[in-house]
Length: 73
Length: 395
Picture 1 (cartoon, helix red, strand yellow):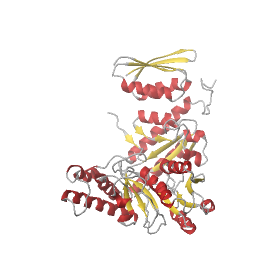
Picture 2 (cartoon, rainbow over the protein chains, first blue to last red):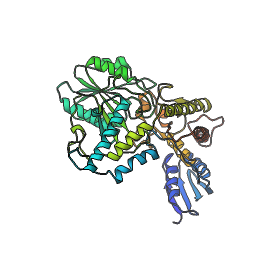
Picture 3 (cartoon, one colour):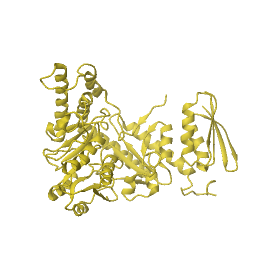
Picture 4 (cartoon, each protein chain N blue to C red):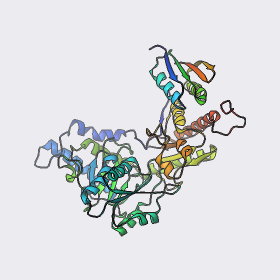
């Protein structure tokens, strides 16, 4: 299916996690899901959830308030 | 493959194979419309199955078969009770009904619909455990009151009301009494020959029966009008082709619920409540501690949102529900938690575990430990939770 980007800038918890899960359900094994947001708790909650799902977190990049998390399915 | 533990049996239950087995012939063999003995034999067979199912379900309530009307589920049953009685009585007795503030949507929204049509509705408050005050009920009944609708047990917090006492108040005051027994039917014993209730909503979906079938108990001589027009089915009270496989499945599902099973669920419920309240700090019970249905445990975890807990539990293989806003598909948090005096935080942090036949003590122990871990993890990143050192977000 290819890599997927989601924009959750300005969205509060738990919306970024919900959107990330939706994207991960659609993704094929090996695809990278990239989620960008600004809500501080989601920045920590999404990697926590990805870890529980046994998925690889490629990186978490921060740019001021904005963060981008990349997860491989 | 990850195992999955379903603990949302208050919303819907897995069909029991024995129920499916009982229903199957009525899909594939005796599939005809129910007809009288003057009709053809396949229809007579259908009719007999419907009659047997009705008699069995009525007997479970201590009622006569002709007092049990099949519907499509508890939503229709409660609509039929409130709107059907309002329609039958018109303005003969007045235009006032009483419901509790924490009713489930079928009753609450039926009451609101009547209100829009000019009826007066009193929304009776409950105490901190979700119990209706009988004196307040008695005071709320006036000359115009014709119906009181108070649930047998609450859909979210599981609190059981004393419907015998409520029924006695209604009887004394000469008003009809409807109760929504969706979450108690077969789980908590009800006998209409003892309890002065006039109408009672029940459903199959909470007891491992099929979805799309329920019933309304209507005591003999209760004024009730047909509110959905069509044929003359169900004693000319509910038009529409009878759902015979559903009725047969509902009766079989009810037969399969035993006292032993209810005791087993009560044990698992208490295990969840005791352990979570003792082991997870800043956790509060929602509902009454002992006067609650066997299958329901509901707590609120401070400083965390219910949606986050449900998402993280789902990821770890557990299905539970929350009274938090997004999850409930309404813009507000649970009206039940607000109704028992809870604030936004308590409503948003509430988690409901509802048990069913297929749950085990091992699953219960797993969900307790996983919930405890998830709550601790979420509190570490919550800006609301007290931290020993200021977290990055709190700075």
